[in-house]
Length: 247
Image (cartoon, rainbow, N blue to C red):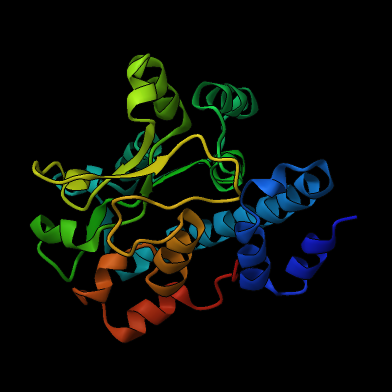
């Protein structure tokens, strides 16, 4: 019986998440695992909807992806072809299930949040800038950026025995590394983790992965740095975040 999933679908998103998070590894009990998985699957489907909505709105308020910041496109077709090769968003590959299973095995256990992020969302890279700012200041946005699943697998595979000494999976660089500046740190998760979610280490808000996504997407349209550096007007930020799905 999917008790928690039913409550989640009725709109009790934070309450259900908090309850399942407090259960720690007890969610792996067969009586809870299917229910917790259904909740997280639905949650990440909502995350994907929100990300796709943001990607439709961002160009309308002057956003430029970092791979195109230094390029001058002569035609719309040229720009579209370039962006197709260097996408901001990549949905899960056909072999994502097999890759997730392997990553879960190599790390000892993935939290359900990360498992279903890679299964339902894929990967996202909002590193860029707005027309209202100097592109060199893009790092102040600290945009949403989660490394691809295949890169996560390479990390663990290459680490070998050293993984046991420092079992952290790097999901993103910090605001500086995202823009190629040295001297910063990384945003990681500590594995193995058998709970529904885990802390997103290194990120300044000290939140779990899901709560980071909530802050990043629902409040700041993918750019939590706007909290301290308001490069967008209140109207622009409202446009980005209006009618996004709570999760």
